Image (cartoon, rainbow, N blue to C red; front, top):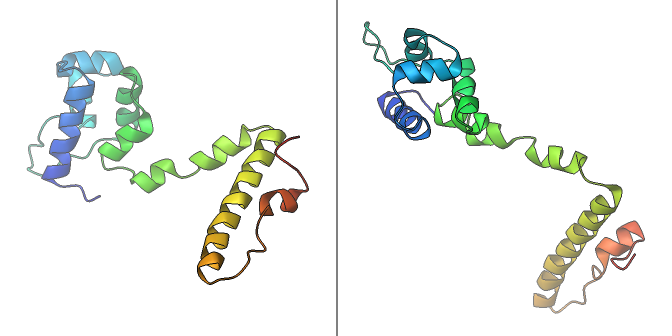
Length: 145
């Protein structure tokens, strides 16, 4: 996302919505900064030199945390991360929290989905699918265990 006046207005609108219309002074208090520092670091005031202000990442995260918002979402809205960057690694983190049984069930489900899709494709071609039960055959497990 390029940082321009439209991006700045989207960011400021999000801050106003998440902050509940709080004053700059109140926002500063909530994030542990003076009102002038908060206004500058959160790009809530126009710059005197006419350039478009860009929010500081640390202030964006502090604002999100102080208001119970997702810091990654705040960084996306602020134009400091793309959606892809913000969601990268989420699936991996979820996998590391799964038990072996849960991972096994997921692998079976993925294998079955592959088998069904390939089977549907093979059926269109008039072939019998060799992929039926693929997930269970891959692991030697069944969903009944």
